[in-house]
Length: 97
Image 1: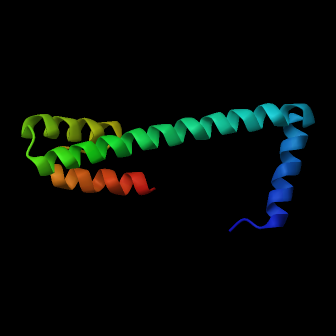
Image 2 (image 1 turned 30 degrees about the vertical axis):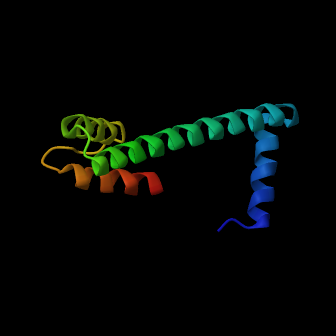
């Protein structure tokens, strides 16, 4: 766990490396990157819920399978010889990390 002393040390290193004038710009960039990450995570979660809902409702099995496999590929998962349920479980685990 990072304590207060480590945070102060990191802050001082940032000031030394980038200068005090660059800190607001760095903070803004970090905030934007965090926002983009959260947006991508929410979109992935929405897609996963859509697939699960479609599976429960008995939608087009082939379409659902294609969407699941595309999501798994996007996460860099191996899709060969795995069922859709296995892939969904792996996607969920990957999202938790």
